[in-house]
Image (cartoon, rainbow, N blue to C red):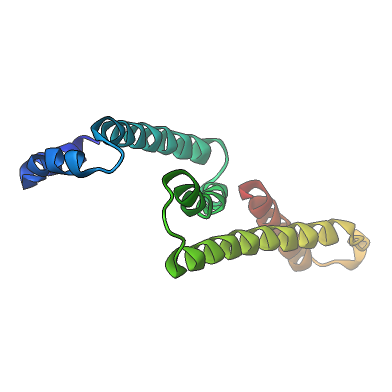
Amino acid sequence: TCVLLVGLFASGEWKTLTGEMKSYKLGEVSYAMTLFFTAVTWQVYTIGVVGLVFESSSVFTNAITAVGLPVVPILAVVVFRDKMDGTKVISIILAIWGFISFAYQHYLDEKKLNNLEAVPVSAPAKEDRHTKQQAAHNHCDMDMIHNIL
């Protein structure tokens, strides 16, 4: 936020804010409220995303962010009466596709993990040392994937 404010004042863009405010269709107060609440919501969003990374994982955080992507253009159309154009429709479709791909991959990983747990282990006398080490290594990899997701 501080970097953005420095950029705003360093570039001289702050001089045009009063003109933008006066030409805003809904009025100057609505313009100021929109800027203020946009800044507040972005701060809350950023803190929430960082907290989600620390509490779960960055992969899960990206999935949650992907779920929120199609919501923004829809809310812009509903709240601000913005026009729904082709770019917004494509971005909504891609965001939904990305989240479904993530969820399906999570399902496949979980199914694979469950199948590995269901396979009976052969008698220790018949296994050699290399096979045991490989099985333990594969199980650790799946545990790591499961913990990440």
